[in-house]
Length: 254
Image 1 (cartoon, rainbow, N blue to C red):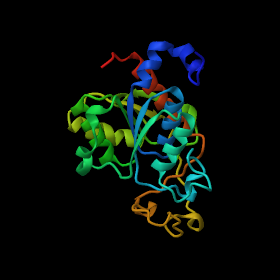
Image 2: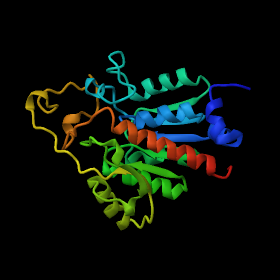
Image 3: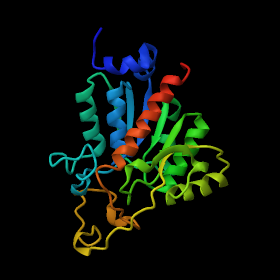
Image 4: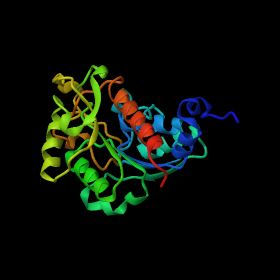
């Protein structure tokens, strides 16, 4: 019978669509990359999601984040993403967690129930903790490397972390994962040399903070505030979603 996923089923088949419908995917970080991951996965027929992020939509997110509009500024990103996903597929199951993932709260998440984990967070500490928890529970994980300060979306590649190059974040991740005995990790990374942001204090978040009221973590807390554009993190998110869909369809049923 014709339905909203009929065109997708022409490529993935009935069995593939059933696997997606029965899958539960956790997306950590609902920003420029993670938002597009969610968008593509819900449109592909994934049946259940956990969305983890403590940020609220900020005016500066409008340049790149799919959930950011003038109407959503100030709202929790997880809530906005959930509402959007339900408008796309009313049958989707979406659990939201308004918090940042940290080693201290890792046990608060039902990792054993996840079929796939997407790491779209932007701190090394959280990324390492996510990878270690995924490995401990035997859950597939894919990590996004740096998408900020980039202008060429065609430079993104899918690779094992130990085969990456150029990306500064990937270099740090290689070193830290090697220390911990992690032998492999699927990542999406760019081989583009990062562009150095233009120093302009008149538009700097450090001197003109416009984070939404009640924001627990402000951008001014970051050591560096990267530049961003609409057409780079979105591509990274779509590539990640593609890998998740293909891996889920290829996986053996639980």
